[in-house]
Length: 311
Ligand SMILES: Nc1nc2c(ncn2[C@@H]2O[C@H](COP(=O)(O)OP(=O)(O)OP(=O)(O)O)[C@@H](O)[C@H]2O)c(=O)[nH]1
Ligand SMILES: [Mg+2]
Image (cartoon, rainbow, N blue to C red):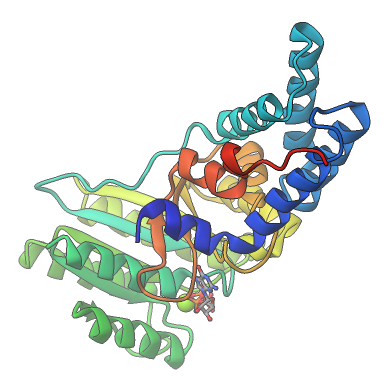
């Protein structure tokens, strides 16, 4: 399946809502008047694009119409896509640096999809013949260690783990040691879910980071904040506050398949200025994709050829 189709399928709920709404509004007249623009703004807000992004996009469309007099459905659709792409433009896909250790530190609040995404990433890079190693630095629950080991087995990836209750930094220390000895390309560190407000847990994260910079100072480190797209406005607050509490280099938006609110990707980028690196589009191992702005936006909106004409 092409990447475009994977995004279309994963984003089906949001696509159905946004595309059908656009078509329904457009079918009235074949061009957009002020009421229709306001209706379109409401659709964006309902898809969780956020008030700020939605207003910015529609204001730009309005200004363009005023300037050119062109309010045709095709032009509005094009401007809508352009507006969305402009907001998301700073996206940078995840890339591994060759001939050195790359470390992905997976962080985020509880249940956002850190462990699942760790497994999916292992699978993705194993397929590319990279030497991958996993670190079970969520030592809170036995089930968490078990879960990452299951992913290790499924993806044929070695896992460094200690027993429940041990210091996550010690796991990371051992994992880096093993990564060096094995000439590993990619070490992925799964951490426990934590709230940015819990100081002791944030300190634990800082300690993990200190170990990484001490033991692997030349490694290419990415701290990836995993955000659950189905948590709506909460996702925005989480992303904002978590990235303030610790240095985050990029976002992974998971569960974009979960509801019709995938527009939250725009709101999160707007609120944090952080790039989205990857998109979780389903529960299956192959449902993790590099986040591509053009493909994401085109997946949410109708193809120009399919636009309905007014009756
Ligand atoms: N539909 C869907 N479900 C996902 C996706 N990513 C993760 N999940 C599901 O989300 C649930 C939680 O995933 P975990 O990976 O355990 O989340 P976590 O962040 O490791 O959770 P804690 O370790 O408890 O903080 C699981 O049921 C996953 O299958 C996704 O992209 N789409
Ligand atoms: Mg987990």
